[in-house]
Image (cartoon, rainbow, N blue to C red; front, side):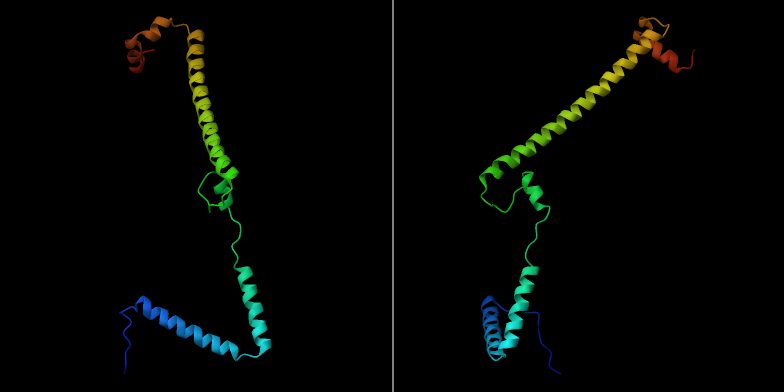
Length: 139
């Protein structure tokens, strides 16, 4: 029984020769086909190529957001896309800052309203020992 050793990969020159022989064999076989079969094969190949054509995807949205694209050479998009991305980041940072300031304002309003409503003097809140005295459970 003969075994084939596939552990040694052929070199580039060997692969080129194999490819040339396969191409020559396919060309000879294609030349021998009847014209109607060759026509149907050509139509099938063209249909397969059109179905395999690359489709538009969300990549276009990423390119608009400033991510590197296919290098279309559209200078206006190359200028506007990073500007739109920077503008979106600035808006996000502004919204986060506004939210943080609103939280701080709410805390200040809570403290001020509790000071105004409560019967305790302001000095009681400023006394450091008063907080510890409340934590011990004293009324």
